[in-house]
Image (cartoon, rainbow, N blue to C red; front, side):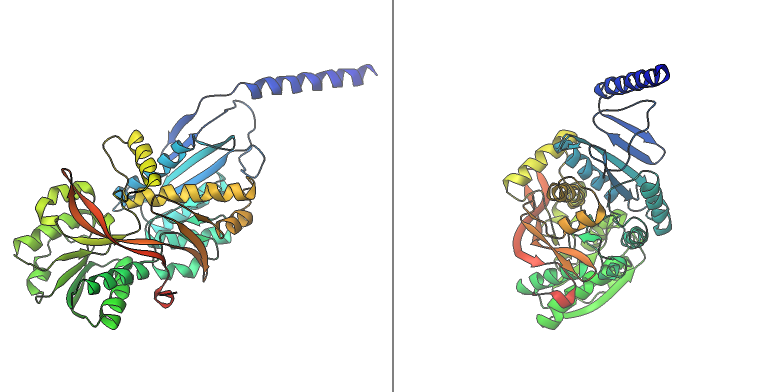
Length: 426
């Protein structure tokens, strides 16, 4: 009897100490180890085993971001990182009392490294959702790994080529749509503006081919236009003189050039006295800083995209205010919006599951999602092996707003399905 009494007293003492320890919550903190950033909000414990699975009641929910913080996609990845951090700040880094943990890894925009980082995030960090990667080949490889391992949902940031459907496996959510449809609506818009002939010059990159195929379907096949030349140049090209001098005069020049080549292309185009209007199939290839460098040379340039901070609605104003609070003097870009929306989509799905992060249940909830956003209402729909959105898609023009050159919406294709070319018009 004495032995049993001692055991009971010891158990009571241990339980009492556990309650005291649980009551001593810690402040939110951010730690960085190597290329990994982990942001934890809410109670912290020391010297005790912690539950890393978000499926456990009250456990942390871990949001993974697998991106190329170094390498040629570094700028885009940093912009998307800001969007995720803005989303977390807007919900006070918690969901229904549970801490939200942000786990970011640098994959250098290398598909092989991206899979290695994904494996670490899934097996060691126990993430519940994957945001990104942006780089299409990395996104494709990571989705394939997730399908073969954890089955957790993957939410894209920017558009993707339809070839990524090969590994989507029913867990990829491409809410910003496929490049095919982006190019299609851009070609449709240029035809509606009365252009009949075009030259195309692109970086030799996967999205360029998808964008151009969509553009030609609308501009040539449906609009009766003609493409005089179609060139694909190496990704590191910054001298475009050989291509520009060989172009036959046309009504419009469509170009997919980004990063370090974007500004030089426009400057060289003007230096050679070329007069055809410039049309870029994606506005996020030119930030406000780059447009400021171009000044009057960029005026009137047109593009398309799924978001612009100049959209006038209450949710966008709220988003911009939260973004500027973290990044004074900066405005959210399409990359930032895309990642922000990814986080908000996941949290909205968790509301539907009652906080259950079981991948199958979250994917089911995401697949039925319909919500308002800073870019207007969008509805997630199943699409072949993935999920995409019906949403507004914007045609934009470079205009001066106050003393800032930026992208301004000039036409909206309302609630269109941003799928592949077979789905256009559905």
